[in-house]
Image (cartoon, rainbow, N blue to C red; front, side, top):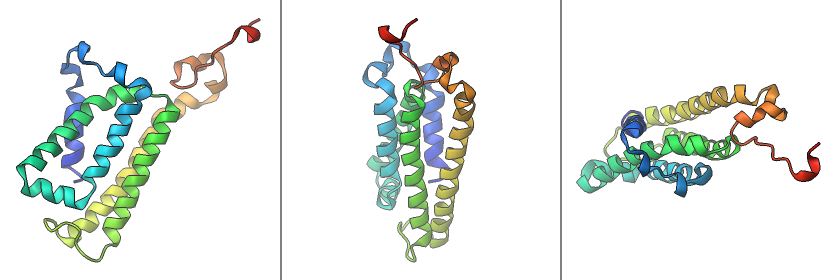
Length: 173
């Protein structure tokens, strides 16, 4: 869960450049909301222990896991590029909270949640989910914080996604 699932998303992410430009999802994904919603739904499903167990015992679920996560990796870069920082904060904040809560549940359960994994592995997975949630949050803050520095309320802020200032005719001088 901590290695294969992120690796599948990474495979899709790196394959984005191989797709023809006409296959862009921009017309269906204004502000990145569709892609970021897909991130929440797909990742939530694959955090369910029974779904992971089914993917180990059923070729159909295994194919669904590979396909959904690679496809998620294909659409995420464009969605993040189109989304303003406030939208990113909302979705990535929810994603981080979901990961951390799932990780705490994995750690605190006295019984195995998935028959295919040992109880000790479940605890390690839980810790990894919590640490991953923290690291993703820190990485996002480090990436976006320089863009939100003193220029937020100045004319240069037009370079920051989500901080466009639109002047109406009454405020022009």
